[in-house]
Length: 159
Image 1 (spheres, rainbow, N blue to C red):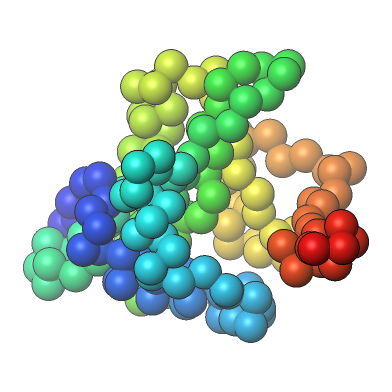
Image 2 (cartoon, helix red, strand yellow):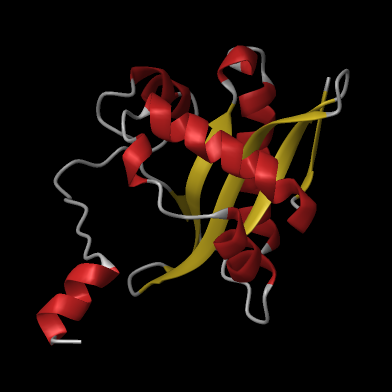
């Protein structure tokens, strides 16, 4: 059995461990530059910019999953819930826990009057793609992710 609840500041160290686990799975652990301290400020400061759920295994009271989200605005669609990361620890995958967590996020999008929700999935992550297909998710091609890092921006702007 599992319980899902809104995340609390005290949950962040464990949530951060799950983020690091995901980064290893996605073969990019060196790209994690976030910290628990940054997450505390960004999620629980004066103007929180993200929210999250935690998935708890009742038999051990351990956090075994998280879903981190924020809101974005689409000029075409309006207010959207953006699922930034959705993580279930490897040992608990395939047991129905992820389904409960994903459906809680879906419900949150409705509670917040969003016109829908969005997320990304790596093109090689077949287990995740197959999971999302069970929900008839639209998986788009033709878009590229674009990023600028703060160090690069400073250099380009001469700061």
